[in-house]
Amino acid sequence: MISKELVVKTKEVNELIIGAGLTGLIYGITLLEKKKNVAIVEGHIYPGGYATSFVRNKRKYRFDCSQHKITGLGKNANLRDVFERIDLWDKLDFKYFDELFSIHVKGQYYHIPGNIKGIKIYLNEQFPEEKESLDHFFHDINTIGYQNYMFVRMLLGEYQLNRNLLPETRQLQNLTVKQYFQSYFQNEHLIEVLSAISMYLGTHANEANAVYFLHYLYAAFCTKPGYVLGTAQSLSNFLLKEFKERGGYVSLKDTVHQIELNEEGEITQVNSRKHHFVTKTVTATCSPHNVMKMLPEFSEKEAFESKLQNLKFGWGHFCVYIITDLDPEELGFTKEEYILVSDKGDILTPEEKESDERYDKLSLSVTNYHKMDPECGRTIQLIVLDYKSDWFELEEQAYLSKKERIQERIIRRAYQYFPKLEGHILYKESSTPKTNKKYTNSPEGSAFGYKISPNDNMRFLSKSPVRGLKFVGTWASGAGYESAMCQGFMHAKLS
Ligand SMILES: Cc1cc2nc3c(=O)[nH]c(=O)nc-3n(C[C@H](O)[C@H](O)[C@H](O)COP(=O)(O)OP(=O)(O)OC[C@H]3O[C@@H](n4cnc5c(N)ncnc54)[C@H](O)[C@@H]3O)c2cc1C
Image 1: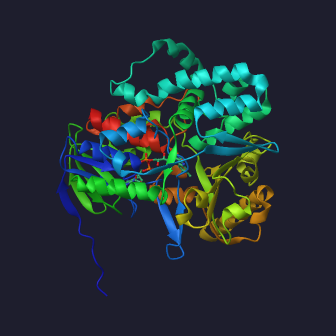
Image 2 (image 1 turned 30 degrees about the vertical axis):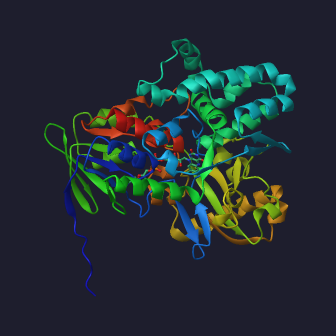
């Protein structure tokens, strides 16, 4: 048999974007308004990065790799504004939630409504003795949370910074989410209910930065979150199609591995598996750690890398994908989204964090995708945040048996809350942080970029050490669909 040799094409472009995740796609679409000859290179066979899905059983079942809530879809919200400004809003169809999540804390469910008015009424009814503190908390969301949510608009010159908020913002930057709630509230249930929401930022309350969290709460509570039918892949496919129809060039299954510089330190060429791109400008939506490995030695490299060493990779996750033989609603999954908090409330000893016990003790998110979109089939997903641990070192057989052991442990945990599930699982499989790395190239399988903890300083990432290179997206400014797409839009507008 004659083996087919890959022919590497040379192509001149005005700008090269690494990664066709949501950041890269919106960045590319927006950039095409001012530049021609823009290319995106994506390592995976499909566009979307974390916003992808996969199918099983002849496409009868569809599993979403990340979509739970897309924030920013209400009038005047940032993501909707982006979609309107690049003529996408009228072509997209979102569905909305009546309830954000049902959170189980110490034997009781708390059902958080889908809008700020309902949330205020509900929390005041549940915790009347905390009324004054709740008023302060909602005030913080509407001031400090709002101002940080508006950061992208501020960089676009469309929001004026309220300097009066800065002293308090700086103070809160030093606190974790847990410390912030403990400084306001007495009621342990209320603290745990609100803390559990940090899972949606891909973190836990005892390590997340309070200001970063307030910005997310503003987005989740006040900007009308929704979702797209057909999983996040339908959104990513749609954005890729728009990028191509507007004149963009895309190369899938094509990983960038080298950026060449001339003696002046300027970019001259980018090499991928399938291309030599002749270009002076590169926008990287992948990890800056990986970009540094693509570059040759240059004078400021060491200094920049030593700053990178101070950042910690964010959590990855362990996900169990389940198909049931009955509609999940009949098995007790009456809501779309649950967060099940253990009595330990995500605070683990180092031994617990290192052992399998973490899968019983860290919060468990349960999503009934069938209720969100019956076309996906009878699918449920169980997620616990996880980290690289020994996932990357294990030999194949040991890796597979550990994966199976953890999968069964998490399923047994789910039975405690949904006993009718037992005996109704038709099919199950799992993903680990190693799977994340395989499909998105993220170091240590991080699913949420770098950790954003108190006092962490990621600001240096806004200025890359190489002329013509910039870092945009989750790795430069934090995770989330809205954040990724708004960052993509803003950076393209400013470029
Ligand atoms: C389980 C889970 C649930 C989530 N739920 C939500 C949610 O409900 N709401 C929400 O707002 N956010 C959620 N998120 C976060 C959200 O999915 C991400 O923050 C967002 O999709 C990241 O987009 P991005 O484009 O910045 O990065 P990515 O999606 O990581 O895209 C980067 C792309 O670059 C490609 N790439 C990397 N290196 C190279 C290379 N060398 N050459 C070519 N291509 C390369 C990768 O393959 C990838 O496609 C969730 C994430 C996870 C993991």
